[in-house]
Image (cartoon, chains in turn blue, purple):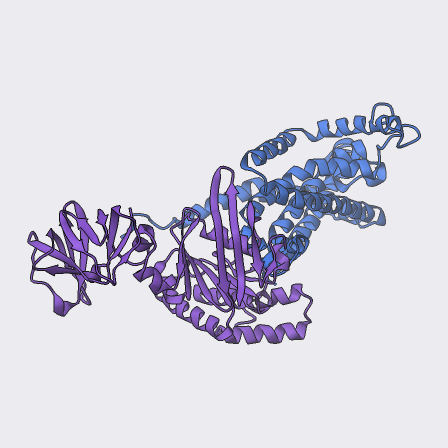
Length: 281
Length: 344
């Protein structure tokens, strides 16, 4: 006879309750605000109108949504492409070296988006930035600014997202059976082919997971696009902040947030499906 | 013809010498078992042969050609790993055909060859399954089929059956042996299980401490061990310390005169007499001992005795059961012609 009892069924209610309190209720409030009636120059009154959503259905906001998704997906893709080989090499290092690298990565996580944004805007500026260094080395004719621009924005987002990608990839990569790669080598695969035909496909699900995490994370970034990007690189998150705080248009901000949430949920679903399909197909 | 030759192969990891100056010649088509206790260097030796480790010194020759510096993926070997290392992202047939796909073989040929190989390991119709849908024994067969896909020059297996339960393991040992005999592929299997080695091997290579202790046919190692380690590792044996002088061996105060058939492998002086339990008899005269344990094993009767502080085991067929009981004082005799004197 076992002394252990089966987990009581009511235990499942705890995560459900948490999800309801911290996610569903706020989301319901946001949903109700998004259909509320805006009082120009003031706040909003309860109501049901789809004006805010209608306003979103314009090419202008469509373009912003596309920009947001493209910027986040781009940053996520760059992070995964950089983080995956990095993590494979990291997992092959001695235990002490691995710890050191992971500690440095965790230290990077302690920096706030604001600090990263301002540091990069200084570092990439014309007067005090790397342009001076390149000019001094004779690589470019005279110092130039690299910010604001897409390059600076991507640099910032990747700096933010890369540690997350590595931390998501590290456990599965370090658990990967080294005999899989060795078996492929015995069977005639060069190290590069082992990487492409075994390492990458076996780890397809974690790769998709890392992509999704960085994607969602950078989709919500609203400081870096303002600090490092040009207005045309502003993402939906920036506009939500703008509408909510500076334009005092909460219904419109809420509508944008709802749309952003739905779009990102859909993309997360698709990515996870692709990752899991890869593990089976 | 010698297919696989090792010349002074040595592998050091820091201060530790895992494989110490191993030289071997393995004829074509033989089934070789690398046997030894864990940590004896047998897996490292297999990895050196495979090219997964670079030797500190020495050479690996295949059909007379030096392959020491050939990378693992250019050796055209087949290998079955301890973890089997089947690819979870590929189907059974794709796993088996992987070495062909790497070599650019076209899809139709690959499919036919995979079907042929799965037929050979008695797994037809499972080609479309996923690895996680297979049982342990089925995975084992898939790994063997994959290792043989390119008709390798040398087929290497690292403790291939260790994950299977006892019954299935014995069955797979016979099956693997039969398959190897049918294909005639030069095969090297690492194992720590002496029964497995005795079942499968043409040639046994017994290792300890990174060194080869003895090479030979299984029965040769059993009947004619080179040293006390070999005698003790292959089957059970009684190792009795004594003193050798010419053909006289003094054991526990009694002098035994050795026969022509007995093997003397030690110089005069302190030596070890090795006698198998089935060659140990209870007689009217001989070395005095006292019965300390008796047990009936059904197919045999085991009598354990204390001989001047040394434990000696004798094994009898049920109808030869000696009339002794616990605590009896008896005399031991050792079958002439089956005694081996080994260096102390």
